[in-house]
Length: 258
Ligand SMILES: [Zn+2]
Image (cartoon, rainbow, N blue to C red; front, side, top):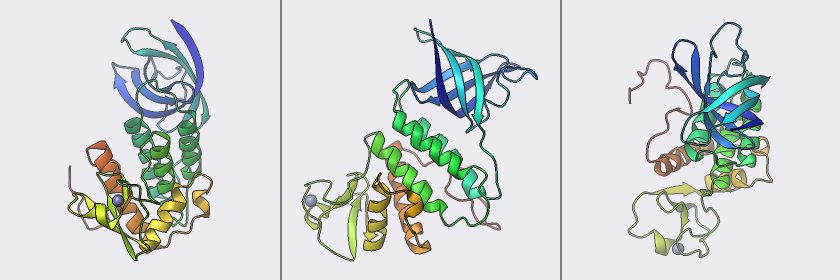
């Protein structure tokens, strides 16, 4: 049994027995792990705050070789997710956790994915005031996570024939094809939406890892369109709707239970 030390983001916790927890963590060095944290909820446990959802902690993990659960023996809090006045930012943090879980396989390390998730959670933590930059921040994270896990959408040529795209006010985007489609390839396909030139330009910028999402100006109309495309794309990829919505339904409208 090896003892490993690494930085990890807490992406899910499930109560186990009276005082313990099964914790899903995304580790910088080992990828996603599920580990038992014995006595996590005792008043004086060694985990003090280090197992709160979206916290980043230095953890010690006893890796089990067989199919048994790993054992988390220590979690020293490095940074905690603070709830500010923006519920959209809180949902954003939960969305980061959902996508880390859904897009990664167990024990498949992707340090770049850890780094981009950690940076996004730090930006979202304690968010108060103007929420308009949150759209670009979240879509930037989602596109980075897709790129790193090998699911990045094709945005500058035809995803099917790799041919050039015509300059047009709207371009076809094939959800099942993973990106933009030329006029020829578009014909007769299912799961195709049409994306405006300005929303496509925004998607290309946000998909470019050299561009910081903070530097991308996303006016409300484009933000809505880009959000819609990403939500549909992620649902197609995961084979289910995302559990965490991008925003809460407006007051007065009842949320439908799924
Ligand atoms: Zn084509």
